[in-house]
Length: 318
Length: 277
Image (cartoon, rainbow over the protein chains, first blue to last red):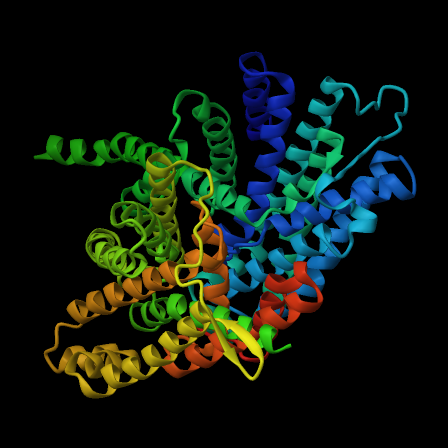
């Protein structure tokens, strides 16, 4: 319970420092990083096409609003449903692969999706221009109000955090972490690893789709940038800088990445170079990310506290 | 239709130049080298610079550009790639991607973001049976075929090539024979980078030049490597020409779909023949 209050408090504290709509943006990105982290950090499958789910969510809900009804909650459901369905379909193929093959097959899917939205489905999706999303409001449930949007996204973030926390601490979570360590042994124990990998793929897809629908509702606008292949680097970077394989790490990494990408280009002209050098430092010296290092320091302090007493007693005995 | 086929062969030849190095590093040191097409871009920009000095001597400028790439690729190999031997795949992925980010940004710093045009350096046409072909494109295809045989000879006859082929099969076995495998890998890496630069130099006059040109080609090169089989020299050759043909034929009927069709082929290949690395 306390972690929820702390997370909500941290984001509320960010609002006076930055604009409220920017913090909403940060939180949506954090949801997306968490969904990526479930697949990369917990299951050990680095996908280079996770933006596909964000885009599917955004387009699913946006098209639903545009052509069917303006109800935002139905649209969110539709966006998640579309991303989940896509995850179910692609998961059967993608999950069989490991390592580089998994990354590249996802990249291929993402590229195909981007192309489909851009060109053959131009009639529906309006191609490169994208289309506006206009949602109807119910009393105080008004998505045009930035404060309501902020609260709604914060609720979504906490809900996703709760669900993923429950999932990753359950036997299922331990199972997918064991798949990361050694899949053959898990299969040897009699588990159907294919099913669990597929399930993780679908869950990660659904959460990514939720982030996509929220992006569409936040900007009131959908365009192919939400599915851009090259944006995948941002998610991977965020997940690593925060510390992969940990939900808190995903949150810290999401905020850190958004701060870097939003504010650094204002001060440093060569910010891509900075990103490159910091990625190199992360890979060679800083593998556990921000949260991992915080954990290390915390453990060290705990050890100092707890470890001193027995030693002192021994010294006293002598 | 004949023009389409020639176009397909040209694209295939360029893809072959670029992906051969990628395939070799994939097969030997198990590193997904995102920085591979960085050398391709650097080669093209070097060509631009040298062509200014030599007043249009395209072939001198081109060979100088390829030579300049060699120390750069050695630098990348020595300080980044060599530290990644035996690392888990995602870290190699990210480190090399970081290198390509730094490289692209440096290029933007030095040469600016604007695309440069470059005209066909030969300009003459070859007339056969009443059809005219641009001589330059025919030349590219011929160079690619020559290179294929040269590489076949290199890997069959020379000791360096033999060691690399053996290491593709079994790295530890070769190391047990007392061969310093890593030194040969760095030779292979430099060779691959120089060939990528050569591909860039040859392709530059018939495409547009901009700092991100490497990234768009990189995905195609990955597709070639996967379709052809990792570390397979002949597979890469045939896959490059097959995919080049796929691109050309798709582009003839449906110009936007050309690159995506390559990825569809790659996805199908991966579905039916998954690779484990």
